[in-house]
Length: 316
Image (cartoon, rainbow, N blue to C red):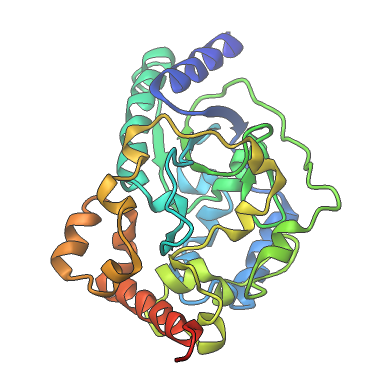
């Protein structure tokens, strides 16, 4: 019975457009994971992201997040763009090419939650977790059998890569549970070697204070000069550790139209970015995740790249 119901839920997830769906038993995260997370916080590796320091009890136990939780349904959706910015253009992390995934994915998750209630009964509780809820996304994706956590701390899906958004639906009924996937990273250190600032101090250990994704998006202050020198060609986020991962050779373009870039975005040249106005920013990034950095943050990033371009320009 549980197996049949679980298969119905997974089939509906795929029908709705999700790339993968798995299920794990709701329980406190493993002790080693909890200790590693607390140590990460204590070292200050979360930088100014104070929300990572709050609700730790809920973050480490879905039963604290939703009393009565029995299962965690993990979901993944591909965001790898069909069209990429040209090499000579300023670069954005792939996840920001299209519309904000929070809005797109949350709607899909709400539809799936309705289906969960159809098969489990209207009394079942469902809590949708789409980035804004304190839960360890990658841990639950691993526990649910979607993939393994790579040395760059991203989830890697076998035969598909790591360009995926993650989300969860915590439910108050038992389901048929999947088994975790063993790591296939082996001795590979390409992601660690590709990080230009040393933010990946060692395997599975990310110092956000040195991470260009944090510095160009979440960070509200200036970017230290010694780190800003590694920005080029990125003005928003950084995909270097993912691009270096050999498993991303399996990446295929997303079929989600909302994640596809506009022709206007793809046509922007460095000179266009240098003169970016508030109005142009609002037009280009309406409903986009780039709004996370705010206009001032993006202009700050562009200014750093502009200075680097000037320094690299030939004399005479």
